[in-house]
Amino acid sequence: MRGQRYDALVGLAGCDKSLLGKMMAMVRLNVPSVFIYGGSILPGRLNGQDVTVRDVFEAVGKHQAGNTSDAEFAILERIACPGARACGARYTANTMACPSEAMGLALLNSSGAPAPCESRDHCGRISGKAALRLIEKNIRARDIVTRKSLENAACVVACTGGSTNPALRLPATAHEAGIHFGLFNVTDIMRDTSYFCDLRPGGRYVAKDLYEVGGVPVAVQELRKLGLLHEDCIAESSRTLGEELDEIQCAADGRIIYPTATPLTQTGGTVGLRSNLAPDGAIVKVAGMSQEEQGFTGPARVFESEEDAFEAVYKRSYMRGDVIVIRNEDPAGGPGMREMLATIAAISGQGRGRKAALIADGRFSGAPRGFCVGHVGPEAVHGGPIARIRDPDVISINAMSGDLSVEISQDDLVARRATWSGQRPTPYSSGAIWKFARIAGGARWGAVAHPGAKAEKKSTWTCERAGALY
Image (cartoon, rainbow, N blue to C red; front, side, top):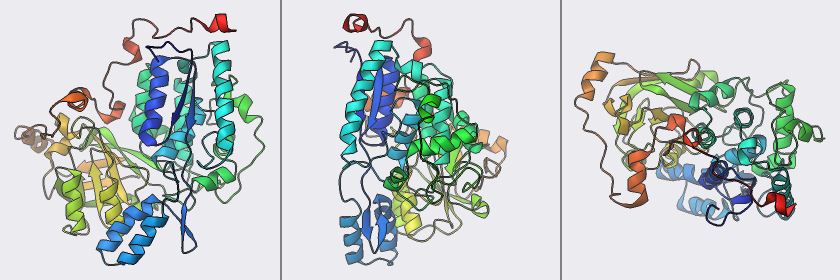
């Protein structure tokens, strides 16, 4: 884009990391930009039920526990992913696709149609036309991505029971625009937004079901009734979000999208945590969990990597009541902050999803069920408290009060810092990953690796040819 000096950007992305990467690029370049999601996969069908990739991850634990035969496992593997594109429930890809509409970078109702739908061709055509209108009116990405539009996006994540990843990705996008918007800004909005879309993994339905009852626009209409939206935000259509919503005719169906008067819960499905174990915060997804299930106390079982933790879980060499601690999987320590999906899914598959907890300085996909806390900061690589936890320190998690603590004194935590051995060595000794590991920040502000728009001396872009074209 910078080399060729294009006038606008239409960005197509297909899975969770690439969605956010594309949106960050749009805001960093600050050109007229339109985002298009590649669409979700259709679900598989097994024994009359929809199945998704998460069912395969959980089947690993079931198979290891002897509750699924080789043949049953093989059938599920063949059926769960019947086509192309991103995971088909409220996992990370769909979680980021939906708020792209509320944020204004994507056209309303452009993210919902599954990948095989012919309506995706229409979406591509009208997105191209939208890009031309944005050039004509010189509306750029940072005119659209504002503090208000980021708050709209967080509301959509909350009401749909989305993944924890937006608490990393919305701050990273804000950073590209020079906006101060961190993990607790996201979780505060989620706390104040009701959860009313019954979508997997916390609920019953998959992505195509949401599309068939009106998609994101209907959910946004319900948020409007609650008075939670900033309707004056500019949308990709070059009109305001309020003007776009005035044309939406569909209403909540009461099965997949509940009316705001009768939500699934009064707060969103994600909670921010903080205490002596996470001074910079942590995050846990509680969608689909009862209040009684939102507290856990147990002895720590510490692992230095996800591979070590998964091996222990696979061999069932952990106890019910344990709090499994995975560290060194943070943005700089990983490096890259990969998701801890395999381990928590195996625990759930073994039937222990409510009988053991997991905390990590890494992150989780939108798919896991069970009590799993991610984004613990300061991270191990920065010498945070999680780097100093030992077996069997007692850890308490309370999603109702927002507390994540370890039952040792502050003096002991400080004393242990003196014996901390520093960052775990990684096999990456050269190249871009080596560089990233040395400059990546913590998850609280989006794991960013550069100063962001606030440090810019001048605008990064001008639409010099727009006037000549129109």
